[in-house]
Image (cartoon, rainbow, N blue to C red; front, side):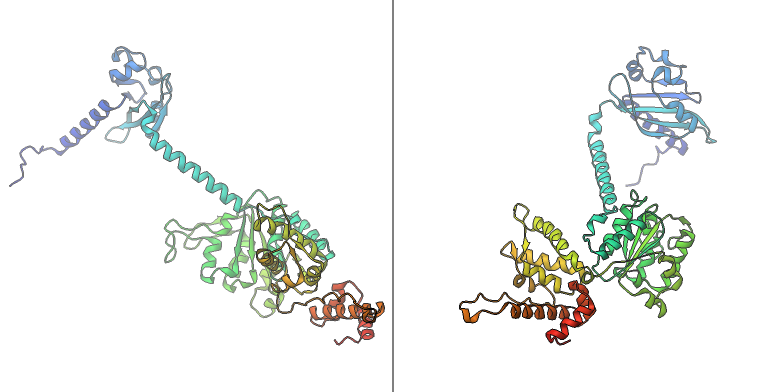
Length: 481
């Protein structure tokens, strides 16, 4: 069957005119009100229903008046002045608010000659699903932003660095001084000594505390992705790039602090780019010609020997000097043995709450367990100490943890403290006091030497006696070194 073309208009503009007429009539019939203004925002036409809503029994009485005189709070004048539509808005009236849309009317040369407005709904319940969805999305966005802001705040304070030993107090004194200035800080020390904790504490006590603290673990990110991680990338800058681009950590940390953990693992090529950003305070995201200004305070941390890396050519000397403005060394746990008891009970309080949240009791250590902890060298430092205590708490059947229970969760070099000598059952078995003390002292010093790897000076410092005294006792008691 052939198509019937007899009714197709010869002039296609007629089709457009009919479409516009149809669209206007549809809106006029189904909307709550329609009115048109000229280029001076005077009413040209208003339908009877809309005129009656605003107190005009005859629509002709509204013609020629300013739009605000007919419809209070009208924004039609803004539409004809700017030539821009207001697609969806709420118009407050003395009754229910109206959902309205306003469109400019233009001539063939694009000049605004008037505007037309439609009141789409007079009952807000018609838009309840839309408003509910918008409200839910807004709440989720607010919650996400709050969560992200919380994640980028300092989690630790100087009080979190537990210890009153000379080494600990010196570190906290230096860190508090670093918080008062804006220079780069380089934190060094073995793994598990609390470098990240110090970084958080410095940021939290600084003038930048209200701004973000952004962390990057250099060792945990592949070299090929580090540049994007730091500086971001424009859309399509590399294969697999996000179509919206990616914001780098420098941009996220603007105004705040950027913590670069394990800086010694940074590839040489990126070290030069980092140095330039620190000096020029600007960078270009990957694949972009956009210059981004940045105001970021750098706190770097490393467990590596950076001077040795510089000497071997694996770390740029100029970057090292740029970062090494304020240097703070976090001491290993074996050099702050006096802090172990305070650390243990601070950790046990937290671990007890996590392991038995509805149990009022607290885990405690026997004296022999505490002596065992103090005699151990702790190669993993505070992190290893917490790990041992956490395992003991989780697997212990009792709240009282002794050396035997704790020793199985420590490293291979654990020194098992000598058990208490059995109580004498007869007079002949009684050991003289001097002999018992000499035996105990010999075992105690032997354990200290073993825990220190045979280093006499370190063993003496650990147990709190002079090095000369330690040598005298070794000779007197016949201890093999």
